[in-house]
Length: 198
Image (cartoon, rainbow, N blue to C red):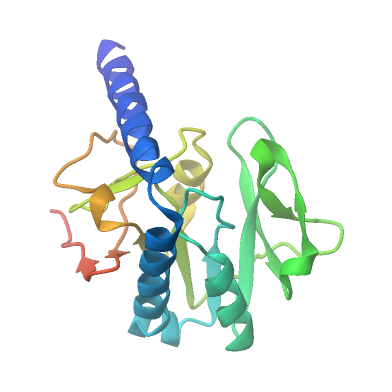
């Protein structure tokens, strides 16, 4: 049990570190980096060939996904955003056709209204854009610590793409046996392809 607790403490410290880096980032710099990530991602072959985009709705300290969502809808892709179903880490994705369908929900996040937006059931030809305070070269991430994405990714077999600032890319991050790594990480400077681990 000590090992699990150790990882949790280390992850908590790293979460605070990378949150701090983002909180002090000047807005003009953030907007410039967000724009570079936007262009790299939307020109990336995995994005272009995907028919469905699973994507989080960003908060102020995350890479901006609002423009990505608008672009994906404009491109005629099916766009699905997450909603926390309970406090036990269960999460589902709901299809939206406009940002106007979102409403403020738990943790101050914008989420779909499940009474108006249909739940996504078919994940064929989809990619999942992952949130994270930090990613490492093996595709592992430091998330918000709530475990929603970790549980979802256990069952998701599509392409997983992290989006992250270069200042938040680490050589190695602690991870447990149930953590699922990204296949690619899009940064303002490059797209990292994560090599398959044996």
